[in-house]
Length: 394
Image (cartoon, rainbow, N blue to C red; front, side, top):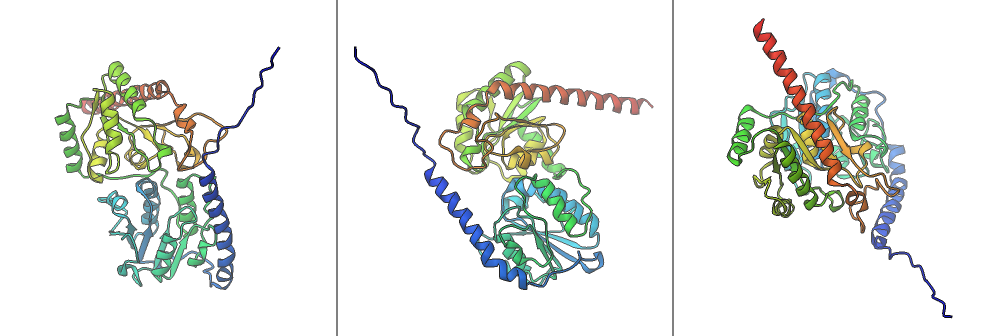
């Protein structure tokens, strides 16, 4: 009688390259900490936060993306409340800086070039703040280049050598919003703002409503964004399409698929998979903000538009796989997160060979939360209308 033998082999590790890169970066940051140590010891430090009367010109630096700027708007409000007579300037890339048009806490906006240091910032400020919550150096170097009397930012891998006012550590177990509050406190201001806020002009809101009317988008309206900076953050377009199909059938919602400059292919796949999707096309940042503000709900993965929706007060449902919701999820009372608890998630990786954390999220789970959000929004709108009616009757 013959015997059958079995050989069990583990799947090939397709992440070896990524593991090598992450290990190399970890070693480099450890070495950088050692290299910067003498400078940290020699650097003259300020012993106290600046007095309000000492600060007339403030520079806020953000070198990253849309969502990071949206989450920083609460800190801008706290700066304005504390340094009432100071001029606040924000330096950031073109997309994020556009979010701050019409923002009452910002006096001036400077667009950050791809390379180099803008000459306009050298010697022009009393206080310079880098809100980068990680080990990146560009923001810290820009702050140092200002030669401001007070320079601060988060501590990470020796980057604090560029500052003279100690800031809090860039802890990875803290929500970015809370880290910003800690940095505000280190400057001597009181962190009172409890949520990010973005602003739109009336004509921008009217333009968005007109665009949706042309599309035939009647209420309720749901904004979908299938994009994300990293491939691992993007839920499958076909699953977005399934959610759109079900919600259109059950609630009669108009489902608008949003896209940025790099999201055209993803939006096209969503719309190809269902005739119920409405596609306004690629829009500039302010136009995108207007469409989100005109909707009753936002559905998407961790991305800039998700945090824009949160800062505009729009309820959100977000699908999070490798993203740590404890660090990046919107935290408003109407914000909901869908995720599957796996041993490998959240990993914060930009690449993954199996993508199980997002593949495991079923459309039905997203639909259920979306229906709950729409029902709550309808009740809130009805309560608001009843209250307004009673005030008019009086």
